[in-house]
Length: 168
Image (cartoon, rainbow, N blue to C red; front, side, top):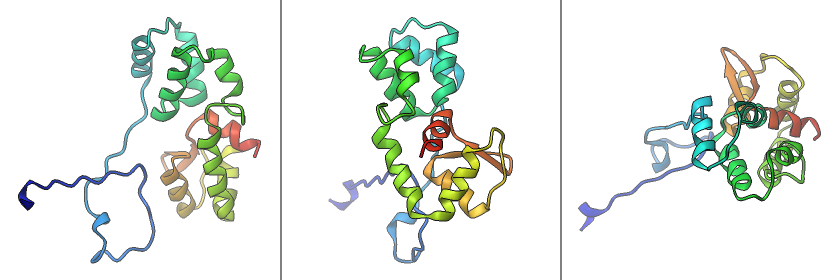
């Protein structure tokens, strides 16, 4: 009977807290990181949703949210349903009126809990070029999905984050 049992554990982000590796069943397995959609994949997704967009419109979308899977699919789904236009989306995305208000508010609360992390994120969003920040803070911000590495330097993962967090 037990030979038929299969257990799969999945989570969206790794948790980096002190765990006893001899006691926790959650510290084993293969970590798989979902990559961002590239330009070709974004264009294909737009086409699959029957949105007749020009390359300029696709680039406008990518300039705001790049290829982030959740941000991208959420925006395209709402636009394809006719709930808002690309222009409306671009205008309200980094605001409390936008689609991502709850998603982004979570990160604001997380950053408020850790002053060093908040300061590091402020440095990142206030720079137009990749910058160096403390390694521990960079690791935490990357684990939250807010930044990306460019060599040993970091930058905001997408313009949406830069615009939203600058206001907060």
